[in-house]
Length: 184
Picture 1: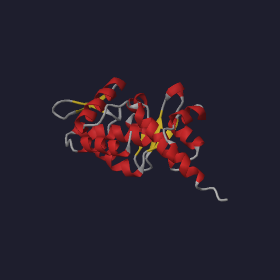
Picture 2: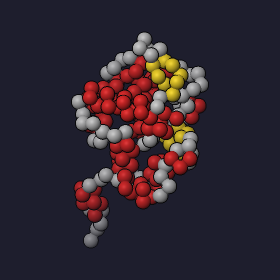
Picture 3: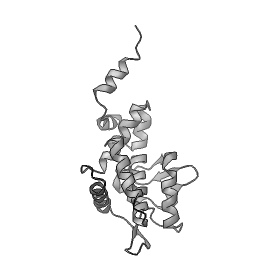
Picture 4: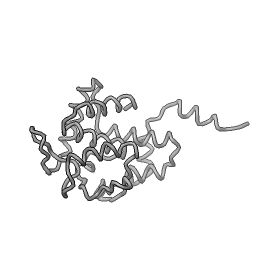
């Protein structure tokens, strides 16, 4: 996904002033900003998030592996706004919301994430995409920013750097820029 598509999608959520809009914006922030799998996002509990540091404990990721990821500083306000609506009682970080706007501390399903993202994509008038596209973008942009492969691998929760490398969606322009650092 491009940065423009992601921004358009986030704006579609933020323009929805209902609790659902803020919950969906928080979901996007976690998928995009932390590179989470949709199953990992819906498995998060409020106790897994440290608001002060932005640390997020991902438990039982793929392969049963736990890891810590960090919410980018620019996305803290989105999560804070969602928490203000959700409340601070224990339970799932991302919850169902009834028609009247009442938060129900019942965990979303991975299928619900797919449905919500498809709905927001239609509203934002962007091409359909997979929730996994956020992970590919996450990995590619970190690598493009010069973050080393081992760190990106740990953040993505991959067992092997070869898996991380397969997520790299950077094209020929990146390779062209890379050789420009060489001095003859």
